[in-house]
Image 1 (cartoon, rainbow, N blue to C red):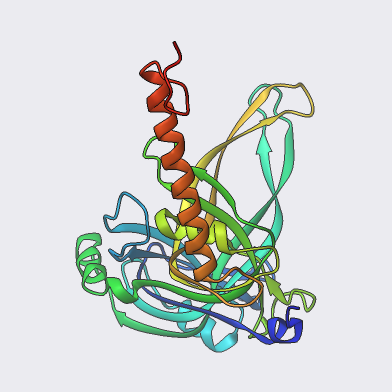
Image 2 (tube, rainbow, N blue to C red):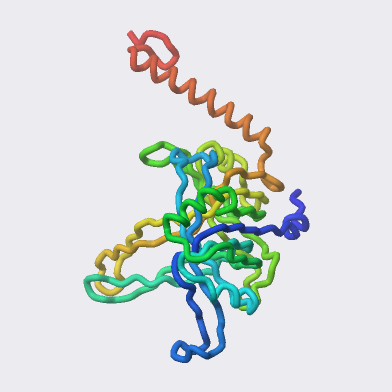
Length: 305
């Protein structure tokens, strides 16, 4: 039987960023026309770099991502609002997700409709201004030197379902996708009091993806050590007004594991290795049978004549 008390008490959600400010921060105030009105939130986009680690993907080149940081904490906002484009900053915080309705507009009739989506941002608990006014080239060199801490996330959460599994249509790389439920360790003062859980998407690749698919069950508790990626993709909707297709570019922020530890409610690695050995034997048997059939024999190796 699963120890649900243990699962509910396991709370961990930590993000470390070392990045370059992409644009001057946005100040969200009570009034959009009065710049002196009370400051509600400060939002900043940071360019960070993914370190070269074996996380299962075929392409392991360093990649840049733009991650959103946002705070309504007065002390943190006082630091963030003074950042400027090109600055190098260090952030330690937590990953926050929120559901919201995204708009899409029909090019044929102009009708705007909404679909369910979610946003993800880093809520800073600590910030530090490292350097000011770097060019993009200087910033990239600085991020490369600090790639190990530029984009790092560690979380503990419950899988909301068994992972979905498929192979990349071109490379054949195994990919697993699932959502985890993370109980908040820190209260986000400016958020709704009812929001006490975050539900980020996890996307794993290669051997990690295979292990995730075989080990993780619904409500299984996992510890994920990885990085954040922002993935852009195309979506298609049908206009509710005229029936035309609506093409929409969308994006999602995902956790990409360097490693996954299976805690409670999951299959052990010993179980996973046993299952993988059985799958390997079945695949070898099938390949042998197909070879016999291709050479004119029956699947059991006896001549079909």
